[in-house]
Length: 612
Image (cartoon, rainbow, N blue to C red; front, side, top):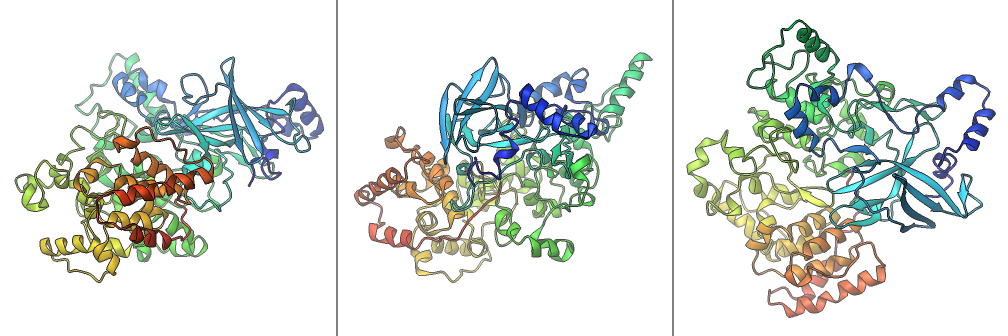
């Protein structure tokens, strides 16, 4: 769908500037005085006080250190108003084009603007020459990329700008090209008020008038703030202020809480049982389901920290169909849920659904593992939010102490090697999102038979890219009770990295390409043509695969400054990729160009759409 299509343009063009004349004309045409009042609402979602929420500013007064550690996190900047300090993208007279629409970006008097050029026959908003000026009002993301939202034409609707800013690359790219999705699919029409608000705000309420299609959206805070984890703070603040007036402030215990469960009337996630604690994270970091007739549109989700999440928005678990009778009819109507979010065996495969992986882990099912076993909001660095030493084997040894002195005998690798890091075998990077591979968050054991059956790369070969699946199956059979499985001739003999990258589906190709830039794999696979195979992937039909291949290629010193644009001209991309056949032929690795060509010609072309 073109950005300027008649299906989309009326949502944002008529009220782009909300000029006095346009608004006045619109008001004059309305007969119902109540309807007039609705248009006086702010043109951006407001930060209100739904359900007893008081915002993080109230917490700061007594919890300065906790506020400080939260404030530097990426949770806080999940969604922000598009103002100085929040916007990292280049708005310095940038020119972009999406289909037939041209965009000129600028910052003027502290405001971020998009000048949109289109056909005069379809433009109905305030025009400067052939341009319609649309204010950029909000931004989502601050770590990897930034997505921008424009004023819509109905209340405070926020419509997605069709370009995304990649922070590290300092590049504007089409929004659709930041996802692993079939290029034949039409670009999605994104409305922040109906989708992103669910997990990118605290206590978001779309408040959409279905008859008028008018939004009066509000949230406690735009980002993920204190009350998202501790619950509404109104009662707590009142209690503490009353006690302070009486000169009897409560003393905090070592957890910072005046009682063992929470903060007065609030919840302390570290002091409740593992399931309820993890459900606080799972409310956003889980693939859940809610019926269309639930009143979340008006009041938001009713779940609050400490509640049982399953009673409000149950988590989808494909492996538990017998225990989730409500899920069967859902999947009958929405069969795409499984392929868009899960591997065929039910393991989650997209980012942001870590809670689904945790639920399927034996350490959670039969132990006391929770999100807080490894992560911490206040005692960690912003990236990954891992608590101290939780990036090491201490994460697992805190429960599996017996392996502390048995590392080598258990892993068959040297103690200090990447092959002896528990994560790499039991939580490999088989989840995809944000243009990279991520750890699955489901604790499992390496298995060529199970992983190959699910179409998923196995942990052993994600390091040993230069070894075949047959090799991994044989080695695992020596170490454990696993029996060798029936494999094709290529699976027995061709290096798994080449097999996945050349012949796999788009999801496998993306994960394989990412691992070709991963230091442990580059160290373990010494006789592997990384540059050649990644170069041949630069003409992949999936934008995200091309991007990941390009980034991994840069880990080769010879290609650090390699000129290539993954969303550039298709003919240039094809010629670039073609040049790497000569690189392949010149490298001593045992992979004949004829073999690689055969694999590439037989690539799995089934449509893939991984919805992050």
